[in-house]
Length: 339
Image (tube, rainbow, N blue to C red; front, side):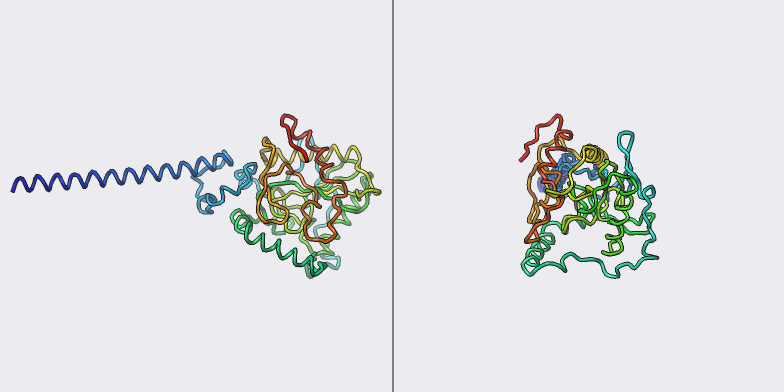
């Protein structure tokens, strides 16, 4: 009987040891898995804490392979909606200063239906647009939904916010102005076109630059606000519009405009905490069929226009020419492989 008890005690003790070992192994594997997740997030953005319940609840871990490493998620959540109006090195003329009429729809005939560029598509262009829409739904809809934030600003407009990945340059195709009053009139025309005629909530561009190099605040949404400037590429992009028509044979960029464009992009990259230390960036393909590694963190509108049978000429100047002007000031300590 004693021998039987001793045998059972040894058996029970062995089971207990195996049970404890099993629990320890499970905890160890769980630690390794969590540690791996933390390391991946740290590689993307060492300022984002893995203990933040919001990040965990949003299942960002499943998106780690597709989040561009140069994007700063922590800054996005901390500062979206903040107005950027310059610093000691750069002056940005606010909407209040240039006199935007926030109540223009109270005394003007405003559109009841939002302008839809797709209404002007041909049958072939509609097919291309449908492909891009399907690509977006398949590859980026979930991504955007994960991060999407909203905020009502002081003009009582609800704005949408997403992490910024790249900068898109446009031209207004309007009047080239160097006189301050003429620039103000041109800005008012742009606001009227976008807000009244097209029914948009605001100016589609985030910033505008006139021929004298003055930089104007456009969209009121602030940092990370989604603008209206490039078909199916408004999400995750910042837009800068050069005031004038820069197609060959029309206006030419002035030196003050070039310098202001460079300073503005330097300022925005600093304020958005974009990591440009690498030579290439993990950006959306123009047709939204996925992502690609590219040195072109700055693009011209025409490079993202894969809808029209006759693509837009915007921004008039060849995008690579613009990059050749801007990049030496961004990558002074890095070699960048220009096309």
